[in-house]
Image (cartoon, rainbow, N blue to C red; front, side, top):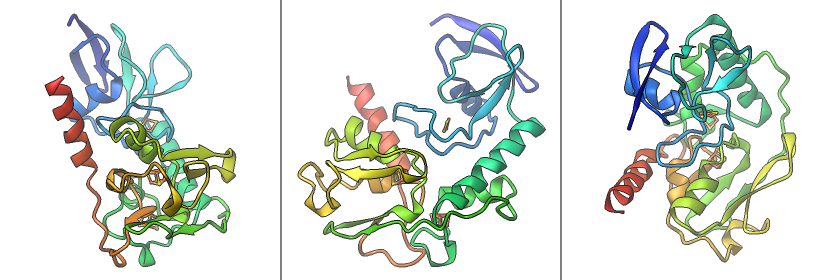
Length: 235
Ligand code: SF4
Ligand code: SF4
Ligand code: FES
């Protein structure tokens, strides 16, 4: 694969053509927060946390879906980016009901970790206090829409890795929801294979095992990334 030169922050790098900015950063210890990205799943650029500044363009670009180009100069840690990352994090918390102290994922949550990482001390936006459903109709798992941040990792892992296509997306804006089949209770789904991959990749307390108790739910997103890598090596 041919190589090109790019500069990211203070690092001059030689990288393979076709690599995303995020992959280059991860390979070179440049830390960019992400939420919808998961290695092994196709990137969709949903969360906008991974935005970077590229010299020569006034737009902020999502590093997970932007491929590096020759001689680009990219900044990942500017004050402007830090401000936006914190703002996006606050909006996640304001949109639905995140009460960490009573959450199944308390202490094991990528959103909670993100809050600490971006230095969130309070939420400056009005909370929507949406009355979201908790779907406990499945015999093994629960979907708590109050904790969902619409990263769509569950949708992608279910369709692209498990091949079941249980999860989909309904509505827009603040009313957007993850749905099972054509919006049936999860327990009535005719496509769910009970594999639990969606639960493993969900970054928050939105998807959990029924036998978990407050703060006990561990997630295993890396297991899905490893599985995809193994499959790619075999094919
Ligand atoms: S999902 Fe994470 S951020 Fe939301 S309430 Fe649970 S622990 Fe807190
Ligand atoms: S249920 Fe979890 S994985 Fe699915 S979109 Fe919501 S936060 Fe993301
Ligand atoms: S990680 Fe790039 S937009 Fe979410």
